[in-house]
Image 1 (cartoon, helix red, strand yellow):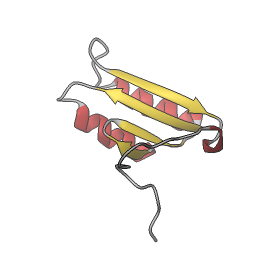
Image 2 (spheres, rainbow, N blue to C red):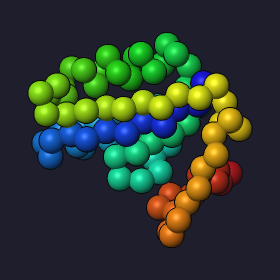
Image 3 (cartoon, rainbow, N blue to C red):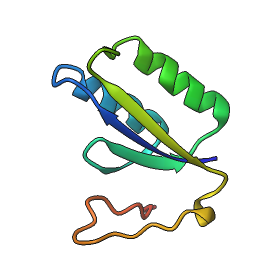
Length: 87
């Protein structure tokens, strides 16, 4: 499945969350990640995040789509991170 994950964490937890998300998804903008991920890997990511987020203050929102082709993405202005792969 294709997901867009958005988080809003307290300042002390932002780096941990960013490092965790980078292990599973592609960074596209501050606190926003996207990419193909299996249901199991997404659960794993969220379980790991659950260990350090403060549910009283932090939030994680996951938008799911079957495939990237079912998602129209429009960028206005500068794209922060190009997803091209260099080999």
